[in-house]
Length: 211
Image (cartoon, rainbow, N blue to C red; front, side, top):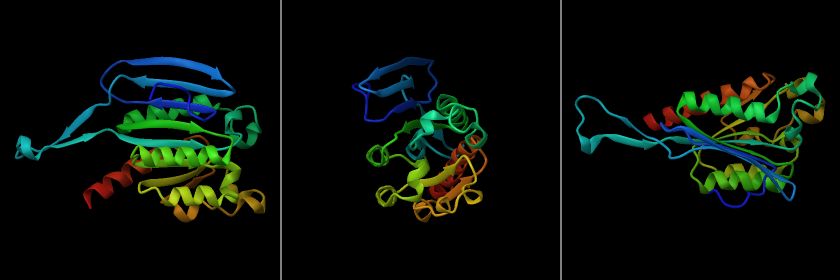
């Protein structure tokens, strides 16, 4: 997991545990920007009642949620700040990590400017057995059947997020290929929408676990 850079222009991973964090920094490699924040080992947590014995304890690994951002979102803070806000992508990742830690979630952030890179990120989430995806496919929201199909192969919770209210903008932004496969959509709440999406994923995971 800590080898060569994956084919994403922005990559941040947080593993939440009881140990202290270490920051590996960032590096440039053939135009791919990689940054990782990791904690040494994921934490097992225990859920049981006074009437349970060891054989019935529910031991579960912390839950992984992928935050997947699409083209031009690496320019957050510089590109049309009146529309997309003044937070950078790094600021957004940090906020998601902090909120994820509060919710007991592992957060893995991915960003790519290519359609294939976003499909690769979704497939990575599938391979890793992630419980949720929070996705802002940006312009590919309105055009990409490939991303739609990749998301259909994911069994976990999917929340679609947009920084701006796409329904108040140009008509070509009103259609989404993500919405038909998403459990919910959050639009127009800026960066805070990602934090709300993480809370929604956590709630929906808990609901499914109790079914």
